[in-house]
Image 1: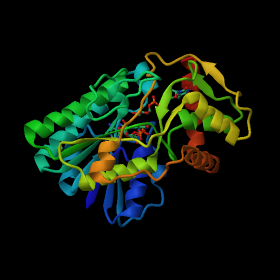
Image 2: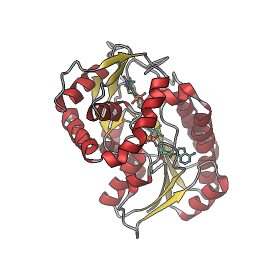
Image 3: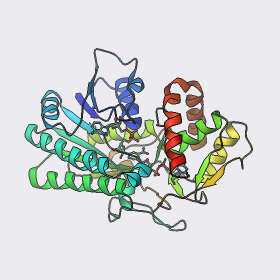
Length: 331
Ligand code: NAD
Ligand code: DAU
């Protein structure tokens, strides 16, 4: 297949592109606007005969139309992805996540192309810490933030275009990813790079919030599985049973980097902060036969810490500006 990958210069998109080129014969074109979150260097060294990069906006209907005509299938990662930014300025989230997805759906309709839409578990809202339930494909949508509400809106657009216009689309909602190439604004890279720079990690609130961690490479293998075997119109939840609270994660990072486990600061909490996410991925495992490779979070985290130690040239240019933004927010 000749795949078009939107947002392929971002964290999860770039991991997917590396995964596809390593494990399949598919060719890949990345369409990416290179916002502050996109990094061309995350795609360095890929084979020129199977990989092409196009800088552009998914809202540009003419460009999108031309690219859809040239490709067999589209995997749609492009988004504004950071909750804290969405609280500061929601507008870009509406433009890219809603209008951008609409633009792709219209092109998929015109060209009758297969589309896989990447979404998040945050569309389901949050769970209590002691709730025995986890999110399933049947959990009602209840998003909390401008970010998650625009992702929920984009999912609903996909469902409507499947039903009303017969667009050949699938959706996946994944839990929190970790791994190489993640921007230093996000929780795990922020804390690792703080410690590497001699700064203290910053925990929002009391650090009790729980996230369900999955390695980005496992997210990639799940998306490839859905692209190849998924049933049109269906939604699949992706998760790897990786629930941990934020305090435990920070303590693991500190201990791996030889620091006292209490050498962190508690800072101003995120407004509307979701308490807990947890994914039940039974449908994906039972119906499509997918299993994650990184079953040991601590081992995956150690590998990720090593990647940031070895790739300071990749993250250092973003670090000061990111921390200046957090300082302005009291975080
Ligand atoms: P990211 O912010 O690291 O990357 C987003 C990429 O999209 C960047 O390369 C950016 O330049 C590009 N982009 C933004 N606006 C664009 C536009 N208008 N046109 C073209 N390109 C544009 O995000 P990420 O963490 O890699 O997330 C990728 C996708 O996965 C998003 O849809 C997100 O909602 C979803 N997701 C993320 C997680 C997670 O833990 N990070 C979990 C589940 C789902
Ligand atoms: O669940 C999937 C979602 O995971 C994706 O849809 C989002 O794109 C992705 O950004 C992520 O959202 P979160 O808000 O969970 O991720 P973030 O890395 O911003 O924060 C993870 C947790 O850590 C959250 O409880 C907030 C907390 N946190 C975050 C930062 C940046 C801190 O305690 N300190 C911090 O400095």
